[in-house]
Structure formats: C-alpha cells, structure tokens
Length: 123
Image 1 (cartoon, one colour):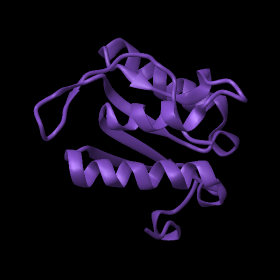
Image 2 (tube, one colour):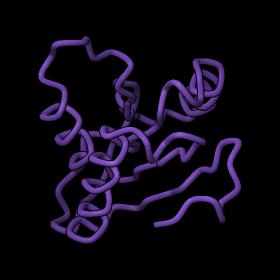
Image 3 (cartoon, helix red, strand yellow):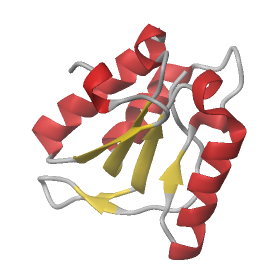
Image 4 (tube, rainbow, N blue to C red):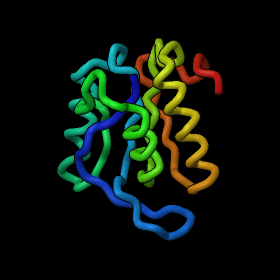
C-alpha cells in the first residue's frame, strides 16, 4: 500500500493556495519495511518538514479519500520505487493521482529507487 501519516508540512499549488503538507510519501510497505521509512521520516522531522505517510490509517477505514486529499494538499510527493511497487494496486492508484497533481498543481515529484535499479522501473 502507499504512503500516509501526518508529521510536518506546508505548500503552494498553481493557484498560490497554501498546501497542508510539505511532502507526501508513497511506498510499498512490504518492500521497504519499517527501518527505511523510520530513518527517512526521522531525517525530515528535525527539519520541520510536515509530511503524510499512511501508516496511521486503519484497515476498514475509507482510505482513498484520505490519501487522495493528502496527495492534493502536498507540495512535493516522494515515490519510493521498490521491487514489487508496481504489483500494488494502491501504489499505482497513488502514482496516477500524484502525476495528475504534478500536471495540474505543479506538484514536485521526486522518485527514490530502493533496492532496485532505475532502469528496471518503466514509467
């Protein structure tokens, strides 16, 4: 599944509206594990980066509306590509939304390749 959980954030869209999050982090949890995510998020926290990572969402909750809104309200999206990233329906749905926001809101998208060669990820 993708990314989300509130930490620290702010942004501007093409309409100069202040964003709620600095960063949305999209990842496949089974691939990256807690260690990488924890280190990544801990590195951002002292810098006062407000980010959304979906580890606080509970099974059975209405997940997509929360994720979709968080993506829209983020200035930057970081997509952590990993071995089985593309096999996750949620990761692909998030990626489509992120690319839409890149186009319509001028959102910055940063790819991160975790234990995978960038040439193995086709977009």
